[in-house]
Length: 341
Image 1 (spheres, rainbow, N blue to C red):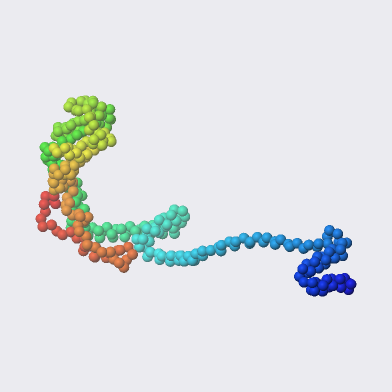
Image 2 (cartoon, rainbow, N blue to C red; image 1 turned 120 degrees about the horizontal axis):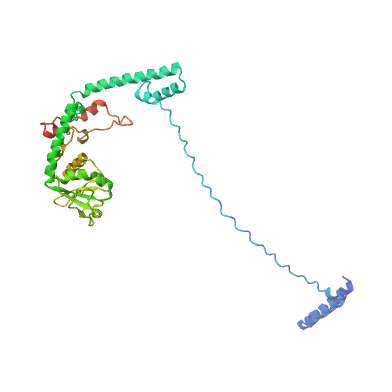
């Protein structure tokens, strides 16, 4: 800056100090005018204004995603392969069940002398062992009423026939007793072929029992075996009849026991009448047992009180044979009643 220009600026300040505050304003204006005159070469741009830069808008960073939680499953325990089971002892029952068919298949597929002889040798062994079992079975059942099946039903023809004859006589006598306190309802249709087939059987019973024939179509069967038949008036629906002919045992108290829905033989129908009468309480268990073709019905293991405990040392609960025999004994009766003949 020139020295003369500086002196021009300082001179008014010195004067202003002397003149006081009102002169300071005037001096400031003179200085401004002098600066404007000195900078006239800059034209309209002499201001050189400085503009403040607008602050840059910084977008906030996107929120961080939540941390991913990974569930780590505990490792599964490895399943231990089952230990191979030991094969059954040679020639035992289990061994024969598993291997005898294999020897037979091998002999069939490859009928060499060795394969065929091996199969027949095992077969011979099995037959001999079965023979030993049968011989011992005969010894242990002989004279043992509980185990000897002949004590229930005779093996001899003459004894079996006599038992059948006796049971038939008892059944006939019992049927006469039942007929005095119960009757039969027979529901049929004239167009039912099985009903026509059953007509002779029903006619036979009609002479012994008071029979009430109910016709579904209001007609009698061919040959008119039921001249006093009645048309169905809802009886079949009330009894739930699903097949014809339907036969019911009816007590004097109007209790119905279904005997058959379909064709049955005369012998079977008579047996069912006796069984139905026992259910009604018209005959006793003892009377019913006399009509059966077996003896000694009291020798029934399934009806005996059993006091047995499984063997905890055996996975299948196998019980020692001696303990089993001792626990499954039936005490001897004090007397033999007629149904124990």
